[in-house]
Length: 259
Length: 340
Image 1 (tube, rainbow over the protein chains, first blue to last red):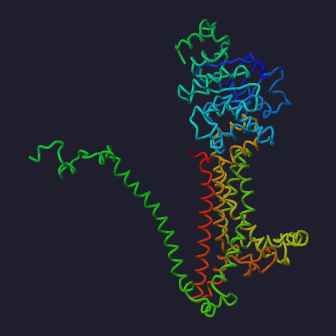
Image 2: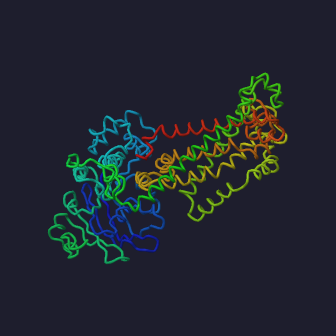
Image 3: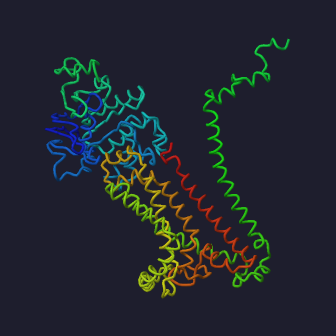
């Protein structure tokens, strides 16, 4: 189920502006890879190229290859919609569909792929996904209530349940805890640790302690100045990055000298 | 001894001093410089809100008072005295077919207009390139600026001859369908033609309001749908339409209100009749309340005017009921509206 991602010579543009330059990296399956770096360094932009979500913005395009188990996501005959069905995404702010019940939110993606699922299958899938997102016990009595009635942390776990209900190969998380309180953050981090046995997880975070806690590998992004493209400075095992990084810029950033 | 009590009893000196005297006054406004303007604006806004209520009540009172002579008079006496009622047995008998005709025309217009309006609104908000979208929006708004008498002329002189063969074909081939039954009119001055013109007239308001609502769909929800692998249409179905649902209903009700009350276009196009008839391809079957008032008003005597105003009261009541019903529809799924 989980797959590796190989990125080669990736340049990301908004119209003529090169936002991210020359990315080379490999994301290992069944692991958590964290992206850290100062604001505007392109880590979120890069994350969104992994499921072609950046194309939603008019004028955005890429050069280079992003290969999932050898298949280039940007190949001529690849449909971005199909890519997004294999690569799930969790956003910065929880975004359950306000017009849907909790159960319908979980099934939203499933229903896209498969219009007719039997009631029993649907119930099983809701239960499984919510259990997978550690939310089942909190919401099992109110599955038909709107998802927007939950707390922020619960909503974010609902979004994770929605993302894993379609059994994606890869799960992308764009600062999933930045709008949450510490208790909810802890719940999400525990969940990430459980999910990595099944999924390839890539997480963008502003919180370096979080990167250190949850990730196996950490990539540090930086940019030379405003108007310059963001670049990948280094990627290594998380322990190495936080104890003995190869680059001076990484050391400066994680020790709090800038950013 | 009374002055030594603690805390001191509030006297006239305490309340009129510059110091806030009690918790009530302190709560109201520590920054006294803003207070005057803030209070003035509050009263202005409250006044504007109250004005609407007063106007509505004033219109209702006017209608009831003016219609009272006709409403209160016994049926046989009224029928005898008012020429308008020569073919009716009572006031209710006169108003009934008019209400029927009004509601039928407006409903048909709404059925034609809403899907088209939603289509245009979605096209301009989510499909069209930005420049085309703004041009199209401008053209749609222009449609609203065309006076209704021009629509009436266009409907009667241009549209009717064009659609007549179509109506004849419908009558001949789909005549088993109750709406298309009857004897097709050779001039097409019939309710279906009216409904089409009304649909064009209410299209701009429904489109404009729907488009604004669709544009306000939170980007987060659109992206949530796209990230699940939704195509653009699936994204619209998952995020945009549910979010805009109550707004579209409000827009449709605005349009329906206009269609119910439209006078000139109906008057100029429709060949009127006073029947409970679903034959929308046949002449001389239905009439709308507003067009009937306009047609009969110049030659009505005082009691006749009172009778016509009674029909106007009925129109007023229908519009109120429609709006209350729309509110109820919107409120029924409030929990799921995204407003919480």
